[in-house]
Amino acid sequence: MSKGTCGGNCLCGAVQYIVHKGVNDNLGAAHCHCTMCRQWTGGLSVTAICFPLSAVHFIVDDNEVDFHHPPPALKSYRSSPTYVRQFCGTCGSSLFFYSKENDRVDVCGGTLREVKELKITEQIWCENVIPGMEVGPTEGVKMFEKGS
Image 1 (cartoon, rainbow, N blue to C red):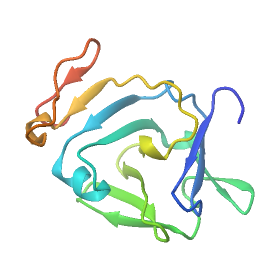
Image 2: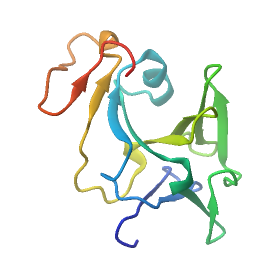
Image 3: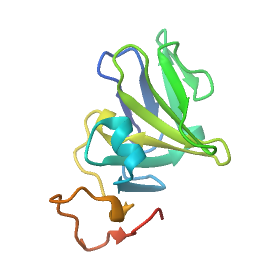
């Protein structure tokens, strides 16, 4: 992978992607504690890294294609009037969520390969944190009771 790019895939490898931005050259990176993200991923929170939609491409049959031409294994679910969540239909890995109203996509951080460092910029929906899970102020990280 060239400098200034990062990439990832689902658990089974049926959905592979490349981001033409460095992992910390993003529009924001957040830990989201909302109920919807927890149910979608099965985790206590999801780490979402936001990139311009034009920066995220899929690898299909060894070719790079834009975000609007996903591999057949990528499935979509409209989780709200605004957002679409995408996952691998083969292994079930949660991969992306985005709004068709803007030009950005949130990548589930756990699907990225070879991330050595990630700067989190905010924690959102902190009012929904699971009791017992510690969430507190961290230098440089904005905290929001609801979304940002």
